[in-house]
Length: 205
Image (cartoon, rainbow, N blue to C red; front, side, top):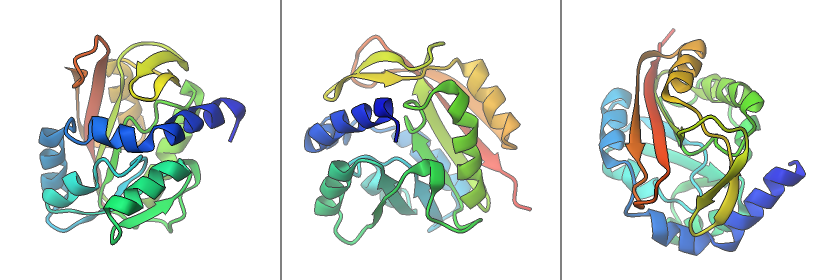
């Protein structure tokens, strides 16, 4: 990891338990239901940056099997405490430890925001490599910044890339996804930051 990403991971390491408590009841449940319908009952999906396991129960509750991981060691320790039988591992999603075409969905809310804009397409190609078909769900802070400071309680001020709805749609289409739908939403914590989210389908070859 470079120094900037290491500093960001350290912030999340320091608040892993608190982060789970802050976010576990503020998840995109309607999007998860849509994602599950597109993936199919009992589909195996990949939660690429699950932090301390904030979406493990959510994905299970909508009828999916999820492998969840994160680059943060402390977040994964918390996740294993709450979900000792879960499919959990520590990884860097830029080089996923899976063979091609293993999953029928990619769940990636706020997953790519800590990369510089130039690195986002390569990470998405890695997601696409392990995805056999099914949906992808992504979200970013809404804006036009490239690793600017934003407030992400309880972690504090973190470096994040924000993108517009038009950028997200274009990115997903460029990666080969179809039936792409993008929308802007308010932050569930009631702060002024808005989020742009997208869902699309990877065609099955």
